[in-house]
Image (cartoon, rainbow, N blue to C red; front, side, top):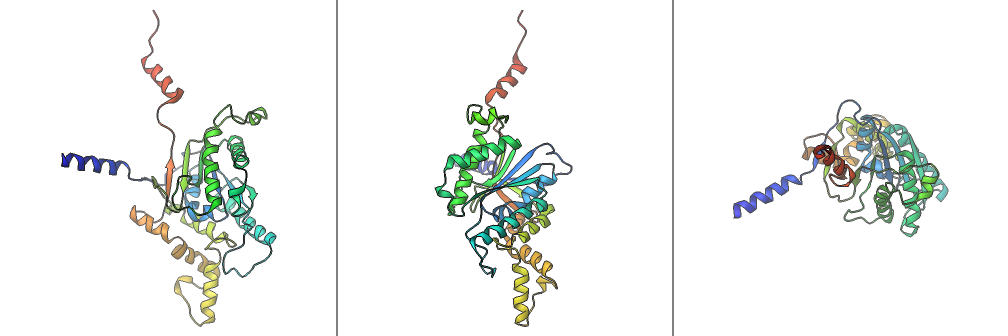
Length: 309
Protein backbone atom coordinates (compact mmCIF):
# COMPACT_ATOMS: atom_id res chain seq x y z
CA UNK A 1 0.00 0.00 0.00
CA UNK A 2 2.81 2.37 0.97
CA UNK A 3 4.80 1.46 -2.16
CA UNK A 4 1.72 2.09 -4.31
CA UNK A 5 1.15 5.48 -2.71
CA UNK A 6 4.79 6.44 -3.24
CA UNK A 7 4.60 5.32 -6.85
CA UNK A 8 1.49 7.40 -7.43
CA UNK A 9 3.16 10.42 -5.85
CA UNK A 10 6.21 10.02 -8.09
CA UNK A 11 3.96 9.71 -11.14
CA UNK A 12 2.12 12.90 -10.21
CA UNK A 13 5.44 14.69 -9.65
CA UNK A 14 6.74 13.60 -13.04
CA UNK A 15 3.49 14.63 -14.70
CA UNK A 16 3.80 18.16 -13.29
CA UNK A 17 7.43 18.74 -14.28
CA UNK A 18 7.74 21.89 -16.42
CA UNK A 19 7.95 21.34 -20.15
CA UNK A 20 11.23 22.52 -21.67
CA UNK A 21 10.53 24.45 -24.86
CA UNK A 22 13.61 24.44 -27.06
CA UNK A 23 14.50 26.50 -30.10
CA UNK A 24 13.29 24.95 -33.34
CA UNK A 25 14.66 25.46 -36.84
CA UNK A 26 12.71 27.15 -39.58
CA UNK A 27 9.53 29.16 -39.07
CA UNK A 28 6.90 26.73 -37.78
CA UNK A 29 4.82 29.61 -36.37
CA UNK A 30 4.56 31.54 -39.63
CA UNK A 31 1.10 33.05 -39.92
CA UNK A 32 0.56 33.31 -36.15
CA UNK A 33 0.30 36.57 -34.22
CA UNK A 34 1.88 37.33 -30.84
CA UNK A 35 0.82 40.09 -28.45
CA UNK A 36 3.25 40.97 -25.65
CA UNK A 37 1.47 43.02 -22.98
CA UNK A 38 3.44 44.81 -20.29
CA UNK A 39 2.40 47.28 -17.63
CA UNK A 40 5.76 49.12 -17.70
CA UNK A 41 8.62 49.55 -20.13
CA UNK A 42 10.89 47.13 -18.23
CA UNK A 43 8.45 44.21 -17.79
CA UNK A 44 8.98 42.38 -21.08
CA UNK A 45 12.74 43.14 -21.24
CA UNK A 46 13.32 41.65 -17.80
CA UNK A 47 10.84 38.77 -17.78
CA UNK A 48 10.11 37.64 -21.33
CA UNK A 49 12.22 39.35 -24.00
CA UNK A 50 14.02 36.09 -24.79
CA UNK A 51 10.81 34.16 -25.36
CA UNK A 52 9.28 36.96 -27.44
CA UNK A 53 12.43 37.14 -29.59
CA UNK A 54 12.54 33.34 -29.96
CA UNK A 55 8.91 33.13 -31.10
CA UNK A 56 9.42 35.97 -33.59
CA UNK A 57 12.45 34.20 -35.06
CA UNK A 58 10.28 31.08 -35.38
CA UNK A 59 7.71 32.89 -37.52
CA UNK A 60 5.33 34.90 -35.33
CA UNK A 61 4.30 38.44 -36.25
CA UNK A 62 4.57 40.34 -32.98
CA UNK A 63 3.04 43.42 -31.39
CA UNK A 64 3.80 45.16 -28.08
CA UNK A 65 1.35 46.80 -25.68
CA UNK A 66 2.47 49.01 -22.78
CA UNK A 67 -0.40 49.77 -20.41
CA UNK A 68 1.10 52.58 -18.30
CA UNK A 69 3.00 55.70 -19.32
CA UNK A 70 5.75 55.15 -16.70
CA UNK A 71 5.28 58.68 -15.37
CA UNK A 72 6.38 57.92 -11.81
CA UNK A 73 10.05 58.52 -12.50
CA UNK A 74 13.20 57.03 -13.92
CA UNK A 75 15.62 54.43 -12.64
CA UNK A 76 17.37 55.20 -9.34
CA UNK A 77 20.75 56.80 -9.89
CA UNK A 78 20.06 57.85 -13.47
CA UNK A 79 20.88 61.39 -12.42
CA UNK A 80 18.21 63.04 -14.56
CA UNK A 81 15.18 63.71 -12.35
CA UNK A 82 13.33 65.91 -14.85
CA UNK A 83 9.63 66.64 -15.03
CA UNK A 84 6.83 64.12 -15.28
CA UNK A 85 6.65 64.85 -19.00
CA UNK A 86 10.35 64.10 -19.37
CA UNK A 87 9.93 60.81 -17.49
CA UNK A 88 7.13 59.83 -19.84
CA UNK A 89 9.12 60.75 -22.94
CA UNK A 90 12.28 58.91 -21.86
CA UNK A 91 10.36 55.71 -21.09
CA UNK A 92 8.30 55.98 -24.27
CA UNK A 93 11.49 56.34 -26.30
CA UNK A 94 13.07 53.32 -24.61
CA UNK A 95 9.91 51.26 -25.12
CA UNK A 96 9.77 52.12 -28.83
CA UNK A 97 13.27 50.67 -29.33
CA UNK A 98 11.97 47.21 -28.39
CA UNK A 99 10.07 46.99 -31.68
CA UNK A 100 13.24 46.85 -33.75
CA UNK A 101 15.33 44.91 -31.23
CA UNK A 102 12.83 42.07 -30.80
CA UNK A 103 11.64 42.08 -34.42
CA UNK A 104 8.10 43.24 -33.67
CA UNK A 105 5.80 44.84 -36.21
CA UNK A 106 4.34 47.65 -34.09
CA UNK A 107 3.53 48.85 -30.58
CA UNK A 108 0.58 50.38 -28.74
CA UNK A 109 0.85 52.67 -25.68
CA UNK A 110 -2.34 52.80 -23.58
CA UNK A 111 -0.94 55.60 -21.38
CA UNK A 112 -2.52 54.96 -18.00
CA UNK A 113 -0.82 56.63 -15.04
CA UNK A 114 1.96 54.56 -13.51
CA UNK A 115 0.98 52.83 -10.22
CA UNK A 116 -2.56 54.21 -10.49
CA UNK A 117 -4.03 51.51 -12.70
CA UNK A 118 -5.79 49.93 -9.71
CA UNK A 119 -8.30 52.76 -9.89
CA UNK A 120 -9.06 52.79 -13.62
CA UNK A 121 -12.23 51.35 -15.12
CA UNK A 122 -11.48 47.66 -15.60
CA UNK A 123 -14.00 47.31 -18.42
CA UNK A 124 -12.33 50.12 -20.35
CA UNK A 125 -8.95 48.37 -20.27
CA UNK A 126 -10.64 45.07 -21.04
CA UNK A 127 -12.46 46.51 -24.04
CA UNK A 128 -9.26 48.02 -25.46
CA UNK A 129 -7.46 44.68 -25.22
CA UNK A 130 -10.39 42.78 -26.75
CA UNK A 131 -10.31 45.26 -29.62
CA UNK A 132 -6.60 44.64 -30.22
CA UNK A 133 -6.94 40.86 -30.01
CA UNK A 134 -9.74 40.90 -32.58
CA UNK A 135 -8.10 43.51 -34.81
CA UNK A 136 -4.69 41.79 -34.91
CA UNK A 137 -6.12 38.23 -34.72
CA UNK A 138 -3.85 37.34 -31.82
CA UNK A 139 -3.05 33.66 -31.30
CA UNK A 140 -0.58 33.95 -28.40
CA UNK A 141 -0.15 36.40 -25.54
CA UNK A 142 2.84 37.01 -23.27
CA UNK A 143 2.03 38.95 -20.11
CA UNK A 144 1.82 39.04 -16.31
CA UNK A 145 0.20 36.05 -14.62
CA UNK A 146 -3.24 36.84 -13.12
CA UNK A 147 -2.88 33.83 -10.78
CA UNK A 148 0.60 34.65 -9.44
CA UNK A 149 1.77 34.87 -5.83
CA UNK A 150 3.61 37.77 -4.17
CA UNK A 151 2.53 40.44 -6.65
CA UNK A 152 2.69 43.91 -5.08
CA UNK A 153 2.29 46.18 -8.08
CA UNK A 154 -1.31 47.21 -8.87
CA UNK A 155 -0.42 47.86 -12.51
CA UNK A 156 0.88 44.30 -12.94
CA UNK A 157 -2.21 42.88 -11.27
CA UNK A 158 -4.65 44.99 -13.28
CA UNK A 159 -2.91 44.28 -16.58
CA UNK A 160 -2.82 40.54 -15.89
CA UNK A 161 -6.52 40.30 -15.01
CA UNK A 162 -7.54 42.30 -18.07
CA UNK A 163 -5.39 40.23 -20.44
CA UNK A 164 -6.80 36.94 -19.13
CA UNK A 165 -10.39 38.13 -19.43
CA UNK A 166 -9.82 39.69 -22.87
CA UNK A 167 -8.38 36.43 -24.23
CA UNK A 168 -11.65 34.70 -23.38
CA UNK A 169 -14.17 37.39 -24.27
CA UNK A 170 -12.55 38.19 -27.63
CA UNK A 171 -13.72 34.77 -28.79
CA UNK A 172 -17.37 35.27 -27.79
CA UNK A 173 -19.77 36.51 -30.45
CA UNK A 174 -22.25 38.05 -28.02
CA UNK A 175 -19.75 40.32 -26.26
CA UNK A 176 -18.97 43.81 -27.55
CA UNK A 177 -21.08 43.33 -30.71
CA UNK A 178 -20.37 46.91 -31.81
CA UNK A 179 -16.81 45.79 -32.60
CA UNK A 180 -18.19 43.08 -34.84
CA UNK A 181 -20.54 45.58 -36.49
CA UNK A 182 -17.50 47.76 -37.22
CA UNK A 183 -15.92 44.90 -39.18
CA UNK A 184 -13.87 43.02 -36.59
CA UNK A 185 -14.37 39.30 -36.16
CA UNK A 186 -14.46 37.00 -33.15
CA UNK A 187 -11.01 35.61 -32.39
CA UNK A 188 -9.83 33.22 -29.69
CA UNK A 189 -6.36 33.33 -28.11
CA UNK A 190 -5.03 29.78 -27.84
CA UNK A 191 -1.62 30.10 -26.09
CA UNK A 192 -0.66 32.14 -23.05
CA UNK A 193 2.83 32.62 -21.62
CA UNK A 194 2.36 34.21 -18.19
CA UNK A 195 5.35 35.46 -16.18
CA UNK A 196 5.48 36.56 -12.53
CA UNK A 197 7.72 37.28 -9.55
CA UNK A 198 6.94 33.79 -8.24
CA UNK A 199 5.20 31.96 -11.07
CA UNK A 200 3.48 28.61 -11.07
CA UNK A 201 6.07 27.24 -13.48
CA UNK A 202 4.67 24.91 -16.12
CA UNK A 203 7.02 25.79 -19.00
CA UNK A 204 10.70 26.62 -19.27
CA UNK A 205 11.78 28.33 -22.49
CA UNK A 206 15.37 27.94 -23.69
CA UNK A 207 16.40 31.45 -24.77
CA UNK A 208 20.10 30.73 -25.27
CA UNK A 209 19.95 31.29 -29.04
CA UNK A 210 18.47 34.79 -28.64
CA UNK A 211 20.21 35.91 -25.46
CA UNK A 212 21.90 38.80 -27.25
CA UNK A 213 18.45 40.16 -28.19
CA UNK A 214 17.42 40.03 -24.54
CA UNK A 215 20.62 41.85 -23.60
CA UNK A 216 19.89 44.57 -26.16
CA UNK A 217 16.26 44.88 -25.00
CA UNK A 218 17.52 45.56 -21.48
CA UNK A 219 20.31 47.84 -22.66
CA UNK A 220 17.67 49.96 -24.42
CA UNK A 221 15.72 50.26 -21.17
CA UNK A 222 17.80 53.13 -19.82
CA UNK A 223 15.17 55.21 -18.02
CA UNK A 224 13.33 52.50 -16.13
CA UNK A 225 15.16 49.25 -15.80
CA UNK A 226 18.04 47.98 -13.69
CA UNK A 227 20.09 47.48 -16.86
CA UNK A 228 20.42 50.35 -19.33
CA UNK A 229 23.70 52.17 -18.82
CA UNK A 230 24.47 50.83 -15.35
CA UNK A 231 27.53 48.98 -16.61
CA UNK A 232 29.16 52.01 -18.21
CA UNK A 233 28.30 54.18 -15.22
CA UNK A 234 29.90 51.62 -12.89
CA UNK A 235 32.96 51.52 -15.14
CA UNK A 236 33.25 55.32 -14.95
CA UNK A 237 32.77 55.31 -11.18
CA UNK A 238 35.55 52.75 -10.73
CA UNK A 239 37.86 54.70 -13.03
CA UNK A 240 37.45 57.75 -10.79
CA UNK A 241 38.71 55.56 -7.96
CA UNK A 242 41.60 54.33 -10.14
CA UNK A 243 40.02 50.86 -10.37
CA UNK A 244 38.71 48.69 -13.18
CA UNK A 245 36.75 45.47 -13.60
CA UNK A 246 37.96 43.31 -16.50
CA UNK A 247 34.33 42.20 -16.90
CA UNK A 248 33.39 45.71 -18.04
CA UNK A 249 35.91 45.84 -20.88
CA UNK A 250 37.34 49.00 -22.41
CA UNK A 251 34.27 50.80 -23.79
CA UNK A 252 30.78 51.75 -22.61
CA UNK A 253 28.83 49.38 -24.88
CA UNK A 254 30.86 46.38 -23.72
CA UNK A 255 30.49 47.47 -20.11
CA UNK A 256 26.70 47.71 -20.41
CA UNK A 257 26.31 44.38 -22.22
CA UNK A 258 28.57 42.44 -19.87
CA UNK A 259 27.00 44.03 -16.79
CA UNK A 260 23.57 42.93 -18.02
CA UNK A 261 24.70 39.37 -18.72
CA UNK A 262 26.49 38.99 -15.41
CA UNK A 263 24.06 40.68 -13.04
CA UNK A 264 20.67 41.48 -14.60
CA UNK A 265 20.30 38.10 -16.32
CA UNK A 266 21.77 36.05 -13.47
CA UNK A 267 18.40 34.45 -12.73
CA UNK A 268 18.02 33.41 -16.37
CA UNK A 269 21.46 31.84 -16.26
CA UNK A 270 20.78 29.97 -13.01
CA UNK A 271 17.41 28.75 -14.29
CA UNK A 272 19.06 27.57 -17.48
CA UNK A 273 21.58 25.51 -15.53
CA UNK A 274 18.74 23.70 -13.77
CA UNK A 275 17.41 22.53 -17.13
CA UNK A 276 20.67 21.91 -18.98
CA UNK A 277 20.65 25.04 -21.15
CA UNK A 278 22.61 28.29 -21.01
CA UNK A 279 19.75 30.75 -20.39
CA UNK A 280 16.05 30.23 -19.76
CA UNK A 281 12.81 32.00 -18.82
CA UNK A 282 9.98 30.55 -16.72
CA UNK A 283 6.25 30.75 -17.40
CA UNK A 284 2.86 29.63 -16.30
CA UNK A 285 1.87 28.41 -19.74
CA UNK A 286 -1.73 27.76 -20.73
CA UNK A 287 -2.23 26.07 -24.09
CA UNK A 288 -5.22 25.13 -26.23
CA UNK A 289 -7.98 23.38 -24.33
CA UNK A 290 -8.06 19.66 -25.00
CA UNK A 291 -11.37 18.05 -25.87
CA UNK A 292 -14.84 19.48 -25.45
CA UNK A 293 -16.62 21.93 -27.72
CA UNK A 294 -17.79 21.43 -31.27
CA UNK A 295 -14.37 20.15 -32.36
CA UNK A 296 -14.74 17.03 -30.21
CA UNK A 297 -18.24 16.44 -31.56
CA UNK A 298 -17.08 16.80 -35.16
CA UNK A 299 -14.21 14.38 -34.55
CA UNK A 300 -16.57 11.82 -33.00
CA UNK A 301 -18.93 12.14 -35.97
CA UNK A 302 -16.05 11.64 -38.39
CA UNK A 303 -15.02 8.42 -36.66
CA UNK A 304 -18.43 6.91 -35.92
CA UNK A 305 -21.15 8.18 -38.28
CA UNK A 306 -22.64 5.61 -40.68
CA UNK A 307 -24.88 6.08 -43.72
CA UNK A 308 -28.65 5.84 -43.27
CA UNK A 309 -29.99 2.86 -45.21
